[in-house]
Length: 304
Ligand code: BDR
Ligand code: CA
Image (cartoon, rainbow, N blue to C red; front, side):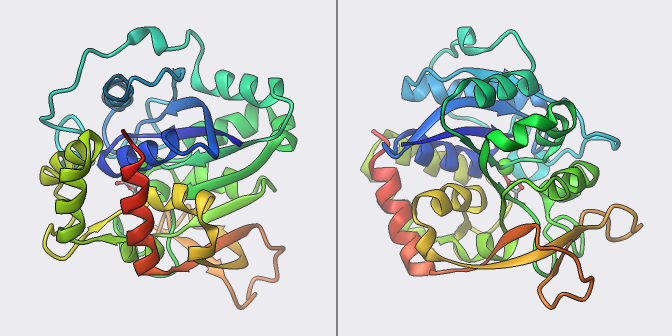
């Protein structure tokens, strides 16, 4: 099994990624860390605790950054609802799962204390991970891979050229991309093709309680049309760990724009090498759409 830490801001599509990771035997989720993103860090932490109570899973949860490094937090409750996961009856959260220490220290401990290297999956803004790399640079050696959902090859979903997770904290993203960590970027372009169609939703709804819960959460989601398909952005990051053959990957230098008054948070994927810089990222540029739908159905089937 592969040891992983999930850094997250649930968030409806985060919930899908978390489900897929928790119920797959090939992954051993050692720690969750939360970060301000879709909604505040308090709200996303509560959401995560609710999800864990729903599945009866006991994984430690460490609360992380309550705002980006330099900027004000963006609030995406217009897309994810006011709590980030509105209107489902969850069982009582187990607050005992919360660690005493901050997310950055807990990540450091997991990384340094385990024999094998650990993979980090980042499906929110990169604030916690940037802090980890700045405070404990020695842990780079202990990270097998950092797989993030974030950035885009072309257009954005938050700004014209910027994807939400990078746009929320561009300075953090810059630190991470320049850290020499083994980095894989599951881009927005791929997430937009990872579509779950209405018939897939009907199928998972009837399949088990996880399918029913996810169907409910998506009925409140305002980030896309239920008719043309739902985009499983964060789910793709976990799919990449479990079924990398579904993805087309290119190695590239990726620069993070932090200055542009209209373009801060853009990921400049320098496939042609204009900047003459060393490769710093594996970029997922495409996905087998049908295979992904199949993978998704099978992943949710396991969540029982
Ligand atoms: C990313 O932003 C959030 O809304 C999603 O959870 C995902 O992590 C997509 O741009
Ligand atoms: Ca997310």
